[in-house]
Amino acid sequence: MAKIGRFKNDKAREEFLRAYRDLEKQQPIPSTTVDVATSFGTTRVRTFGRGGGVPIVLMHSLGGNSLAWTHVIEEIARDRVVHAPEFLGTPGLSIQTAPIDETRFGAWFLEVLDGLGVDRVHLVGYSQGGWQAMAIAASEPRRLVSLTVIEPGGTLTKVRWGVLWKMIKAGARPTDKNLRKLNEWLNPGVTLTDAEFAGVKAALGYVPSIGYPRMFTDERLATITVPTLGLFGSESLVADATFATQRLRDNVPTCETEIFAGAGHGIFHQIPKQVNAAILDFTRRYEPTDALRGE
Image 1 (cartoon, rainbow, N blue to C red):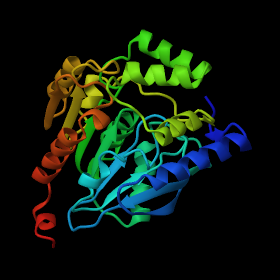
Image 2 (image 1 turned 30 degrees about the horizontal axis):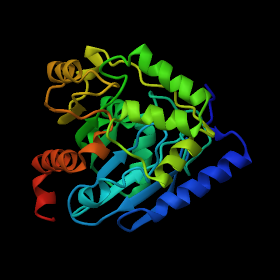
Image 3 (image 1 turned 45 degrees about the vertical axis):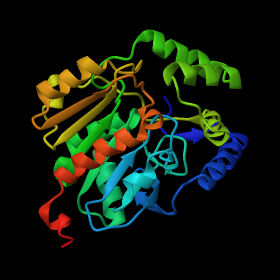
Image 4 (image 1 turned 135 degrees about the horizontal axis):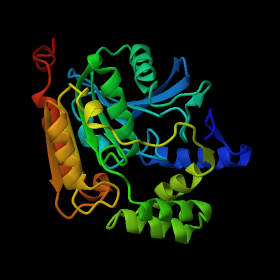
């Protein structure tokens, strides 16, 4: 694993930028961007919405970036500020300059919040972003109001070898047919737009550097003391929903879980209204009183 994430070559970077710009045109609501300097490199953060509540920070999935929230961002950012950072060492417009692994995710996160001028936030992570969010909550919880993890593969249950093998094969031969077939298998019922598919394919031109999720021990889960919500699809191939929810409930002191019947790993695409409602209900219930009053 490379210590510093990078595009494979200039052509790969240009292809990614073209796909990124096309995805930017599909965003349903306006946004602004800022590049936040950290000890690990410059982090691109896209900000949506406005309002007086505690901001939400969204951590994207494997191969995603700040534009990965098209299906949910309009509702999530309806009455509050939402920040979507592009994680260092993954395909996006952040520029990594120093190694980072899960022992440093918390330090990076605090520097990003400082750069944004934000005190406390609700943290939401999807898929690989769920791993990053859990690592942050375990090491640097003091500025979190709540934590929501959606389908955090590899952290609560092991990803089956058959799933990993199919992903490896598709990555080794990333033809349109192979990539679409993998998406249909992992996320049944989810059809990517042409721009979304181009973004997935272009992301393969980046050499990531942050490693992959490792199972949290029961002891490590118990260090997550902020109110936590876990959301899963009953048909997910990435996480064993029943076992994952049980581990959260058994080990995280303040925890709620929900399994959506008939949904797979791509629940943000399949049932965005239901997922949004669960996230917003949870964050509002743990909103500090002064934020609710707009003070």
